[in-house]
Image 1 (cartoon, rainbow over the protein chains, first blue to last red):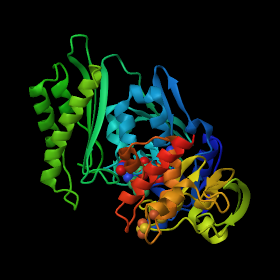
Image 2 (tube, rainbow over the protein chains, first blue to last red; image 1 turned 30 degrees about the horizontal axis):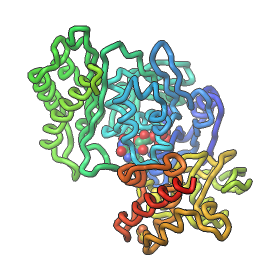
Image 3 (tube, protein in one colour; image 1 turned 90 degrees about the vertical axis):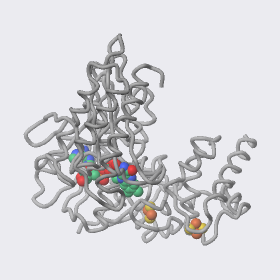
Image 4 (cartoon, each protein chain N blue to C red; image 1 turned 90 degrees about the horizontal axis):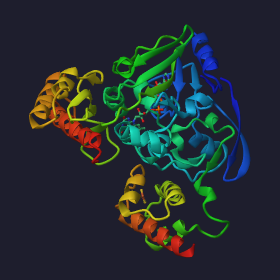
Length: 287
Length: 159
Ligand SMILES: Cc1cc2nc3c(=O)[nH]c(=O)nc-3n(C[C@H](O)[C@H](O)[C@H](O)COP(=O)(O)OP(=O)(O)OC[C@H]3O[C@@H](n4cnc5c(N)ncnc54)[C@H](O)[C@@H]3O)c2cc1C
Ligand code: FES
Ligand code: FES
C-alpha cells in the first residue's frame, strides 16, 4: 500500500486516476481505518485529502455554505453562522460517534461510506445539499441523495472524489432538524434517522419541504410523499399525521438485532413527525 | 512496501520516525517510539484507550495513520505530568480512586485534559458526554466524573 497526501484536488485526482489497483480516499479515516484494519478493504493506494486547503474550509457562497470534504464534525459545530443557518445538518454531524470521532469524521466521508444508517446524510438530503465531484473528466454536481447507490456503493466514477458539499441559502422562515433513534444515548448506529427541512410563507403556510429517512432502506430516502403532506398546509396535526403515514409507507427496512421491520416502520413515522415539528418551531423562530 | 519517514512534534519535542504506510499512529507511538501510555483496547475507535491530542483535537490514535503525523503536533499521556509533578487530573484520579486496573486511565486523562483546556467549567452532563468515547470496565465511571469535576473546580480557583 502507498500513502499519498497531495495538496491540491487536481493532484489527488491524478493519483486516483493513475492507480491501476484499488485506491481509496482518506478523510477522517473513522470508517476507512476500521475497514483497513479488519481486512475489509486492502487498497494499493490511500490518498489523504486533509492537506488540500480548499477541502479544509467552510466558506459562505451565494448566501449558502460551501463545506470542504475534509472539514470535521467538530469544526462544523464550532462554526456559528453555519450552525445558526442549518442547525439540523450540524446536529446530525455532531451525533456521529464520540468526541474522538468528532475531531476526525467528515460529512462527506459519512456520505461516501454509503451506509444506509449514516447520520448526516438524511440531514444533508433534507437540506437539498449539492455535492461537487472532481474527476479526470472535470467537475460535476450531484444532489446528496444521488451519491450512495447501495450499502457500501457510490455513484462515483474511477478517479473521482468529492471536493465539497454546498448547503444552499436559507430563505426567511425556514428550519431544519434531524432526529435518530438509538437504544443508548451516545455512540450507536441509527435504528432509524429522519431529517426535515421546510420553509413557511408570511402567513405560516408551508411553501417547500423536504423529508429524508435513514436506516429504513438500502440507501437514504428522499420521501416526496411526506413532503407533499406539508406543502400548502399550516403544518397542523392532520398534515403531520399524514406525513408520518407516508414516511412509514416509504420504508423497506431489514430486521436486525437493533430493530425489527415493524419497529423501524413505526418509528420512521414517529421520528419524521417529530423532526417536522422541530423544523417548524425553528422556522417560526421559537426554537 | 515503501517505508515512510515522518517528522513530527510529540509533547513539544521534535521527533522523527520511520513507519509502514498501513501502520497506525498508535503502533508508531508504542512500537517505534516506546510511548506505551496510549493503549490499544479495541483498535476500532470504540474504547478511547488510545486517545491522544493531534493538532489540538482529541482523536483515537488507532484510527490515525502513522504517516499522517508529518508536520503535526501530537500530545500523549507521557506529556501530561511536569517531570515528577503530576498533572492535577492525575492527582485527582488517585485521590478519588478513579482507576482500578488502569488500562483506560491514560485515555481518560488525555480526554479530560482536552475538555478542561476548552471548557474550564463543564457541567456533569458535559463531562459525561465528552467522555462517552472512553470505556472503563472497572470503575463504573462515577469516580472518574467526580475526579474531573473536582479538578476543574480546583483549577478554576487556582486561576
Ligand atoms: C466509534 C465509531 C462510532 C461511529 N458512530 C457513528 C454514528 O453515530 N453515526 C454515523 O453515521 N457514523 C458513525 N461512525 C462511522 C463514521 O465515523 C462516519 O461514517 C464518518 O462520517 C466517516 O467520515 P470520515 O471522514 O472518517 O470517513 P473516511 O473513513 O475517511 O472515509 C469513509 C469512506 O468514504 C470515502 N471518502 C471519504 N472522503 C471522500 C471524498 N472526499 N471523496 C470520495 N470518497 C471519499 C473513503 O474512501 C471511504 O471509503 C462511527 C465510527 C466509529 C469508529
Ligand atoms: S484502541 Fe483506539 S479506540 Fe479502542
Ligand atoms: S480502570 Fe480498568 S478499565 Fe478503567
